[in-house]
Image (cartoon, rainbow, N blue to C red):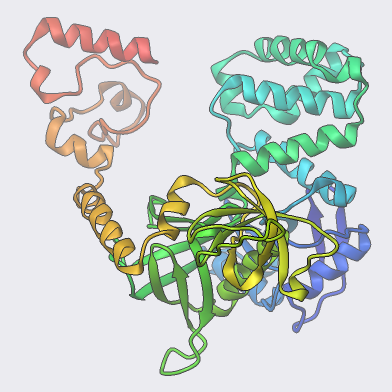
Length: 473
């Protein structure tokens, strides 16, 4: 069986009916000498659909069988099912470091460039994609600014829709200028460090595209606009999304205090409890164990690396060797060979007083974060559970009024507000099957009548509406 890597290499592997995605991922990592294997997963693609098989217990041949059944359902032949397997980065750890493994960084960098070309990853500003293209230019060709190289870079990075919006010559000019004026040529920066910049940009810019997704239903917990949702887990935190990918709840890791699977009742093995500063959620999910395992790993890894803690109780010391602090105050942890967690003491700095000293580990809570916790998190930590519940209920009341407004598609909107469709005469000449206009459908054709019903009969505004539509085109 062949698996395609993001650098376009194809690797053939022996597979049988019992082969799992974990085994395939292990074989692939050994073949390419990948050390930082976490978050790399196997993906299967069929037609326009792509989905992750993860790197766990999923049987690969089961997924391929599903592809064959789908082809058969569409009238094709099972043995000719055009499925493809890919090996790519699915999720980052919160402490990801590009310097740990150059092979990992190269594969993710290739994935980002490929994603730009196919429109998977999109930038808000043209300048952002130009700068990414300039980095790719330098990585591939160094200081060589030839036109042929520039053309290859534009083909590699610029999506077809962007090439339609601006000419290829314009993109060539912008990318070539950014490459020539960029900091890399003069500084002779190593290509590996520029690759790391591309990877870090993607990690920061598109965390939701580097997430693991799980279907879940809320059994109990604070009120949400929907009780069935998708749980998205990535390096920034945990997000509950509805079917239209709207955020129902967002949790950073300092707001998550624990997670455990429920081991009793009918939902054994399929339920978990997510303990947070915004309330405790009992969730039913087929992949409950995977969710708990991933969250537990992230929380544990963050606490091990964290430099931030909060006081659980007031500690007042006359001896300057020991640190005094109040309950709820932020303590910045300092590495010290003499004071270790194993001995029950750690060195810390009270952020309010700027004083340092020994801190008893049972008097503080180490926060799972690599960055200074926000004021919101610190406020929640200082509140009682009842106070937090009241704040969440008040916030949810505000959100609820917004969420109750049902989203409307342009098609639905057109039924109520657009004029009556007419038969398209131009199409009648071409085809005997004359269809009514579909006014909501995307088209590059100018309109000869306004779309809004209330403009019909108003010649001046009708003319303006048609001109405006053409200008937008």
